[in-house]
Length: 290
Ligand SMILES: [Zn+2]
Image (cartoon, rainbow, N blue to C red):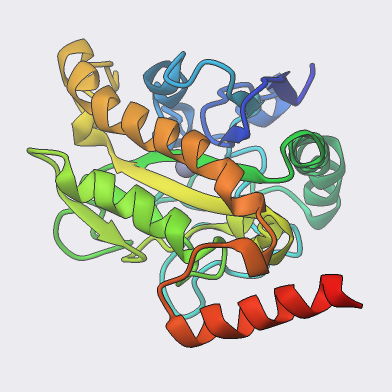
């Protein structure tokens, strides 16, 4: 059982899919409560939603279910959102706070899962980021997610359609964040928030190195945008998905187009600040004179 499916592409954009896998070992499945067996907190059909949206994009997908071990949590077990309700590295409850296990896993079992599933997934993602960055001088990691629109245990009210997370701007250079946000806000019939309840999980926080050409954005989609029901059987709504795929395609194409400009050295990047321009020019003229 390979914990990761990797498709190497020619584009500077990498799609990560940590929560679409549904595989669980039989012995683990046997310990889930009836609620747990519904696998309710899966990012249902997100791989189908993004399929072929950006030809040439790499994809890195976890094949195991998040109830085995959550690929978008800190492997140390540290909370993503200290002080708020959230689910852990191996969740003990679902998003409503209801128990998932007849018998929760032991520390030793969690450690084995960390080594057998969490670590290989992130090693594959890190290797793909390094390969893409070596080829293009830059890599843009786009972490794909979805969640129910209403989850009182996690947040008040109804979630906007597009929830963009950059850890308050730490995971990418500002133009990447602005590009994604602008396209989402311009998409008719959809609502958008930047760094709202979902600011980006461990994946984007861990892999992003904006100062070294690795930019990361998390996209958490409200599931009403592409599911017929947000309860079992979690059906894919092809008409909704067709509408949603338009702005998603625009986002991915814009990131791919933007990428080459992110590799330029700081002193040749266009700027609107005249003072900086003058300083940069002076430096540029001095260098060849010596
Ligand atoms: Zn997710």
